[in-house]
Image (cartoon, rainbow, N blue to C red; front, side):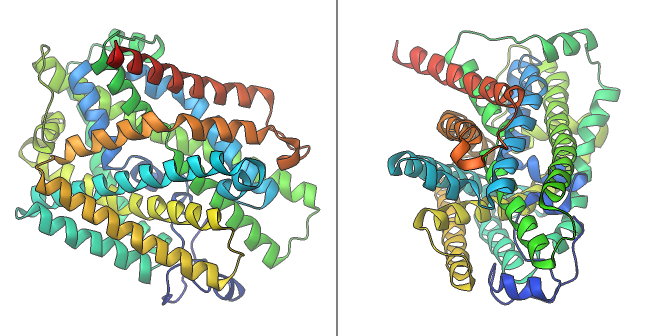
Length: 444
């Protein structure tokens, strides 16, 4: 979708109906607004993803590459299911779960989502502080607070699509990982084999890394935010008045959604695979017996073959840009999930409450990021823990989502195709199996 040029809103996510009536796009924070392309790469691969993929490649070489490749069909299916449920019902995922599941199951999903998003946001804020320190030198805690305030100010006063058009160019530094694959001594046969043949080591450390990679690849906040985006698009088309028949309009919307989802997910997973491979071809190849990198500075050496002495600066630009792009959908989707749990009716009053929740989540995340600094937690380790938390808690959300897509009471005759649901169940089974195996090794 192309963004318009609305005037500055004075309240975040407020007066949405008024802005729409004037032909303006709401200043909401959904990654899909900037469409497939460079912005997609930057938003879907936030600092947590970049540093987790780097750590996975550095520690285990190409052994986890299959996760990025084989998870793509399931990730497409999950996003399709989330968007289909929202397009058919006209409500987001949390509202649908609230209506069709028992309260304790619904609250489990919402609390899990809020907790995981808050930790993810805190890790991204800490990564912004580290990124600024790599670029400008100075105090990481000070930079963390400064850029957290910058992110909140951007969300409050500017439409997301407007500033994303500029910030996404910082993601150009991610192409350094592709350049590394051209100049480094890459064992292409090993890459091809590991990309399609799963390799699983029966060790607690490996399974923890597998869960972390799954947690940053199968990102629940993208599912929730895409569902909210479909609701916004449907509401906007309804307000403008479509001349097409409802079935024709729905078919056209689903076709566009399918095309965008395929491309967006492909580019996101490809970027993650390149980061992992570049780290494997450099950091792991140099130190095969390996002590993994413990700082972002060490992780930056993965792009040194093409960036040279500017490797740390380029990684800092990538972390800073992707964090500023990822924080709005993380905070926005969590705020909408919290609002849906209370059943507040649509309108300006609800929008103001969502804006208040978003500010509280940003403040809470900034406090957690500062606590990370106080206790000496490196941003790379914080991002890894965030991804691991996501991977360990994502299973209930995936199960509820797939069951919802097959409930006739929720989607009527527009149930997801059996093949789509099968792909979703494969991703769900993989996360459950990895979690179960990790638990067994921890206990026994």
